[in-house]
Every structure is written in C-alpha cells, then in structure tokens.
Amino acid sequence: MLSGRVFKIWEWGAVFLCLMSGLYWLIYQLPHVSATYDEGFSYVANGEYLVKNFKWDRPYILLHPPLFYYLSGISSLSFLTLNPDIQLLRARLSMVPLYIFFALFIHLLMRHLVGRKIAWVVLLLYLFHPEILAHARLVTPDHLLAVSTTSTLVAFYFFLKKPTSRRMFLVSIGIGVTLLSKYTGLLLVPLLCFYALIYSFKHKSMAKSILGGMFIILVLGAGLLHGGYGFSETGKSTDVFVSPQFQKLAKIPGAKFLLTTLLPRAYIKGTDFQMEESSKGVWWGYFMGKYYGAGLWYFYPVIFLIKTPLPLLWLITWALVTSVSHKRSYPLLTNLLLFTILYWFLYMMFFNKLIIGLRYLLPIQPLFLLLIGLRLKDISAAFSSKFVSTLLTGLIVWYVVGILKIAPFYLAFANETIGGPKNLWKYAADSSLDWNQDQKFFADYKNVHPEIAAVNPRLPTSGIIAVQVNEMNLYYFHNYQWLRDLHKEPIDEIGYTWLIFQIDPEELKQVPQ
Image (cartoon, rainbow, N blue to C red):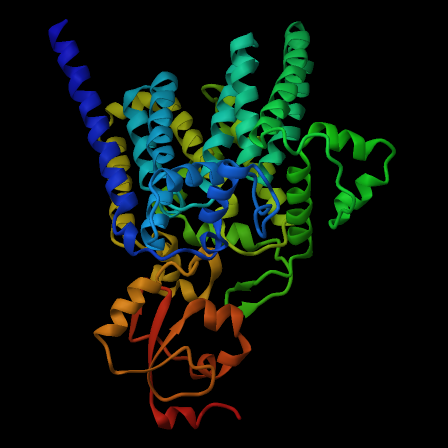
C-alpha cells in the first residue's frame, strides 16, 4: 500500500515537472516577442473597454466574440500600467493558464481512456506542439477555440454514451464557451446536431433522451452566449448584412427574427463581417513563391504537411490509416474525432478563401493527438516490445528536440521536407510565419550590426540589406521582384522572419529593368 502511494506521489510530481517544463518554454523570452498584427488591433485596449462598459461600438471590437477580450481586459485592469510592453505581457499571461489546464485535462482524459503510458505520450505531444506553443501565449482567440472545441467534443462523447442531465449541462457550457471564443466555433453546432441525429437513428432506445437533451443543450448554450454579451445585445435587430450568406438568409420569411432571438446582435454583425471576408478571399495571400488574391483549396493540406513535425506527421498518418482499416478501441469517440477532423478540413479548404495561416486548423490539432492516443491503446500489448518502445521514445525525443531548437520562434516552425524553418519564407507568410512578432529581436540585431546598409529597400540596393518576409512577400510583393530575380540566399536571419542579404553592385546589373 505504501509503495503504491509513493509511486503515485512520484508520478504526479513528474506530471507537475512536465507541465512546468512546457510552461517554461511557452513563456521563454515572451517579453521580447513583439505584438502580432492581430494583437496590434487594439485587442488589449478593447478588452479593457468591454470589461468596463459592455459596449460593442469601437473599431475592430467585432472582429471576435468577447471571451478572450475579457480574459486579457481583466488582467490589464487588475495591474494598471502606462508601459504598453508590460500591459501586453500581463494580458498575454492571462491566456497562459489555459495551456496548463488543458494539458492536464488531456493527460487525465487519456489516463482514464487508455492508461498512464499512452497519456504521457499525448501530454508531451500537446505541450511541445509548435503551433500550440506559438498561439497559447498570445492575446488571440485561436488557442482558446482549440481548447473549447476539443473539450466540448469530449463532453459530447460522454453525453452520447449516457445522456444524463449533468453531462447535458457540461456540453451546453462547452458550446456556449466555444461560441464566445471565435466565430468559427459556430461550425461545431451543426456538426453536433448532425451526429446526435445519426447516433439516435442507430440507437433508437436512446433517441428521445439524446434529441431532447440536444434541444436543451442548444437553448442553454445560446443563453450562455447572450450572457457573455451581458444581454445588452439581446433582441436587437441588424438592419444591413454584408455577406452573401446572411443576405440570402435574410430573404427567408422569419429568418431575421429567428436570428435576432437566438444570437446577440453584436455576434450576428461580427459573424456577418467575418463570413464576408472569408468568402471574398481578398486578404493577403502568399504561398509557395506566388501572390494570390483568392483562396487555394490545397493551401491548408500543404501548409499542414509543411509545418507539422515529421514524427507527429508519421503518428497522425498511422493513426488515420489504422483507424479506418482496423478494429478500434472506443469506436464512437474515434469516429467522432475522424468526422470532426474531416469536416473542419473540408470547410477550410473549400469555404474559407483566406490563405492566412495554419492557425485556422488549430481547433483540430488536439483531436489528432487524442486519435493517436486511442490508436496506441489498440497496440498497448506491444508496449512490452523493446522495439516498439524504443521507436516511440525516439520519435518523442526527435519531436521535442526539434521544437526546442527553434525556441522562441515557434510560429516559424517547418519540418525537414523543405529544409526546416530557414526555408519557410519561400513557401509562406503572414501567421504561418511572420506575424510581426520579431521586431524587438531585429532591433537588437540591428544595434550590433551597423554594416546593414538598408532596411526593406523596395528599389534595387547593393550592400548588406535587411528585409522582412511580409514586406517582401505580401505588402510590396511586386516591389521586391528585383530581389527574387537575383535568386539570393540570406547570409543571416532573425527569427526566420527577417532576412539578411548581401547584394554586390555587379549583381544588380543582372536585374531586368
């Protein structure tokens, strides 16, 4: 009895140390990470404004639902400062606990479903996932949406297994929080409704409990959404819609009234705006050496393959193939994960024309990890095999070391298929690589390198020059055709987003006039 208790204490001590290790690398050099473009849209100031006033009448305040605004705003108001860097840091630290809590949630879930050994694998895959490390420390809603989406899906799985009132309540909270996290969280609602119908059809004895419970879940989830807006936007109509989808919907008799009843006005206006942006696809678009003014259906699959660590990519491929072709543990949960991953991927590929960044797939990244854990359960007997244990250990070590090697520049991660992050600038821009996060690192570099002759020269310039990736690939793409024509490789880089080139005067003669 004593030895078992000591083992549990040692084990939970190891979990704590693992979580603290992940936390260390999450906030490593965080004060030196500049405000990203999205954070620069007055996100912190808007958070403070919403907490004080519960009004949605400021520029950019409708870009997202208010939950992450509240988290950052409460933190900022609790520790007032006139220093914008300290204000941003404190707002970012308000987002960090989600990373720890969700890592612990995943670990406990996997312990319950598949056992301790596999739970450790999934925990490490989450803690050192480059896209999660990149976004879990920012005042943006992407990681929050990933946490709420995954948690809701897990709660929904347990509800389908046994539709009790307690589980029904947990799912409704999950839906409400997901809707308050980001507008794309709305995609989860029809998915859960569809799956509830399918499951009820297959299990007719539970149909009444599931479908009745689903109705209550939607009502409570909508109530939580209205509560998130302080009920100040409840029952107010929106006169003008800008997206084609909402314009068509408004022509249906009673649809506008129903929308106003179910959703707060600010939520409708924000969703309408975001749907217009995603359907137009006229946002910045650079991919694989070309500038695009519209979406590419293959952008998300390719950027996923480029920016996912190879060890994880192999595990994901193995989990997907074997989930379809072999007997599975927890078939309901496995199918739910597979269907959600496919659903989200297809939506982003064919209905979202913004080729901005891999972060749009962040909500399904934890689902891949859960799927890997479930598949490992099916071969748990092989864990006694030295070969299997050694192979899995090697993959995890490769995975963790590969991430730590680029710290703190997690957003710039790219795998070995393109030569690593040093070559990512040839394939991607914006939030797949350069979100303006390395300005402070470049300023420090410039201070100790006075030999830099020019910064972001849009005309042919000789000497040692520094060029930001987004400057060259997005904002002034055509102005930098002269640099691309030289086919030069950088002699140095800062955070993989600032590139240092050495241009000889004789080389400029090769540039087409």
